[in-house]
Length: 261
Image 1 (spheres, helix red, strand yellow):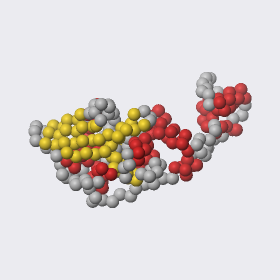
Image 2 (cartoon, one colour):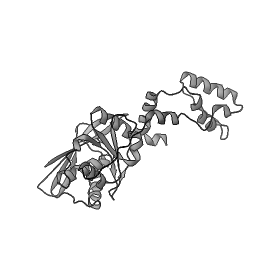
Image 3 (cartoon, one colour):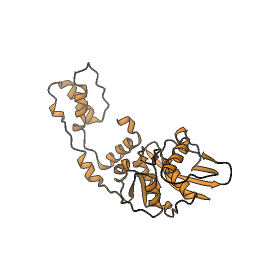
Image 4 (cartoon, helix red, strand yellow):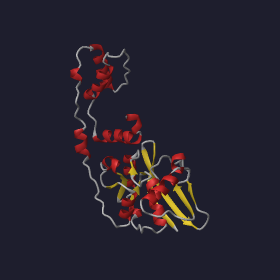
């Protein structure tokens, strides 16, 4: 029997669709993941197995093959845990998931069955909308960034069982909606201001020139000379972002979250 779950992967700051195909049949018990998976994806089989069992379901017996298509692009990260688990439950007929084609699903699974956050959710949500999907199921910690994509229903995933029951039509989840314009206005307010800086006229002049001309600038000096204080206040003299520019920056932060920490 074959089940297909829609997911997505990130390449750069853009996402592309991934089909998670799960096939189960007779043979020696084994789970084979193909489609150029990296080490984190290969480890998914152990996380998924334990998460399924701890969620009150039974793991498949026999030989199970999971294909991440297209097979010529390397797949990275743990975001395929949740779609793999849903595919296994569907192929083993523990859930009747007739609505799987309506959703894109991403999420990492804890051993308990809880769904953990992943990176790149915003470009994945944009990709889901471009595919014409009804909605996207994402970890609850990623809901806010996915919900800024208009024309797409964003459903929060807390646990594997909750998601399984939702796609099987046995549980109702409320889609989360956000107004990107309202969020954009809130984030244009700063707690600091460039006018707070007294003295340092030459450095302030250099920062003003860099901000006006969109140039790079490197601040060098001993501790306590005011480098951090000045750098934190540079955004307050930058030209205001347009909403589209803010979306691009948010996509960067969504995809490369560790760089922005």
